[in-house]
Length: 288
Image 1 (cartoon, rainbow, N blue to C red):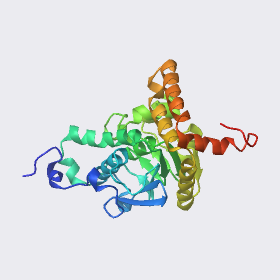
Image 2: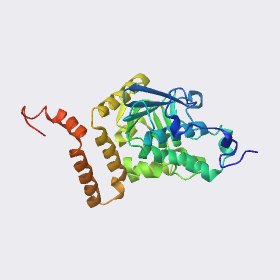
Image 3: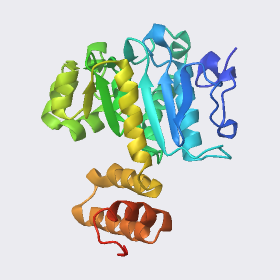
Image 4: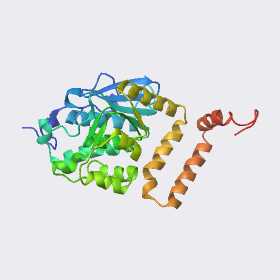
């Protein structure tokens, strides 16, 4: 009889950090490196609307752990693209995965929610390409990303209250008020109301709306390429600052910014990146 908090899934051997990130190692994700330094993760359960199965959650955990604690990876990952494939981005919890019903509920809840935490804690900026419906936990995945771009047919559905749950799930009560404001967040989480791409852009939930999937892929890669042109340490420190900025006083935020800027000003690689930009605007022969 299977034992452990994941029921009959406990006997399955998952990937570890030591295994690294390999293109052919995942059931639910298609992994590639479209640009040097860019890891692209494509949710590949198209028939299931990319619903969050046990396997998908385990694979996201392993990839986030490798990104946080890399061991002999062939190339440094500086930017992550997370996008869907097919008619929808992610339909949320996979109610058809029978293993989930047999798992210990509190442990399972934590297994799902800690993926969201890890997406915020990894040092790489995450660019999310939303190719359709982002419902429930799928919305949470999008909210946990740093930059969100969507296609015009996208819909954002905080469906938790309609499932008999609380409206706050997998970080929605944390992210939504900070992104769109408390009033708008309340109007969604209390009712389960969905919004379309136009409204999402107007509210600041997404930064860009594109017409189709091909342009979505291109837009995500353009964003990643732009980030690659910047200081790697600067990007990591910026994400670190943003993660903590809304839980601290102005004085503390200024202290953290001062610490980051002092570090960056002494870092040779970052100075070179900065000078490449500044040199366009100052007289030849000047020094930073």
